[in-house]
Length: 406
Picture 1 (cartoon, rainbow, N blue to C red):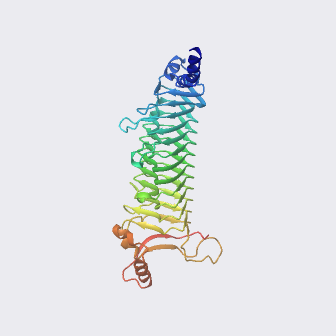
Picture 2 (picture 1 turned 120 degrees about the horizontal axis):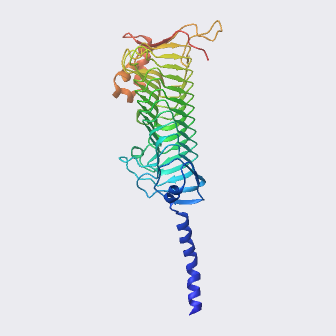
Picture 3 (picture 1 turned 90 degrees about the vertical axis):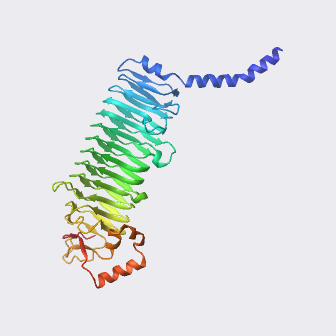
């Protein structure tokens, strides 16, 4: 009998040890947070901790890259309602899937936070800043839930938040990076792949968007009703689905678009007329290459300035929504791969202006349903005949008086 009991307990021992290890690893994190003094540091031991948890006082929560907070699959995993909280080296997963309650990996409220070097996955929204000021969100890796694109949440979402730095984060498999009613923020050196909009900016003036890499999204950067932006040194590629564009501006004046590279997009840059005569964009030193349409103008005459840009291997260099759209734009010193002039004096500037006229292109530009037949043999032949012997006056789209030679 004793030997039988001994064999029983020996067989049961591994299971008991596993259950004890699981209970130890799933520690009651909320109790540890509540016991930490304000301004103190809670350094977590390696293992898994049960979420959701809430921080209501200034402290540092440090996971050392080996502590995980696992949510129950509903609600937000980690919420902060205080000032001066640091979240570092945590693995966070398991949010809910409700868009109404904005279920997220991390929800921040307050000011002066630091969220750095965390890994966040299997969440609907990644990091949600709700009326947050003067905070740093740096070096995080955020991956959304495996959902259809339209059902995903934002990898990062700023709402009524100012003077924050979003730098060096890697985002993937999310809907957008959203900045709503959030002026005066800096978005620098981030990466985002597999989304709907790379960046969705609305009513958020004076943002600095610099050195970000966005690829495989429906649209790269969309700017709506947000003046005084700086877009500098960004790389936008493969924004092709749903008629997307690399960069889109709508009623967003006085922006600087400089040193960006836009490749393999449905449209490189899509802009409307400025809301007022002084609200034009400055677009300079950018490269638009291998796009279906390099530039697209809709609305009125425009008045934007295009200086020293490079247009290379776009299927159509410039398209307009109707005759007159973009006719007030100013062009100078751009490099055009379809320029047919010479540089006899060797000064690097073409001897004759570069002019773009619409011939048969007007058919598909003015009649969207005809776009399906663009570059078909029939339209190519019609375009050739129009250029050879125009039976109607072609429409001048742009004139660059000083095209730069390659």
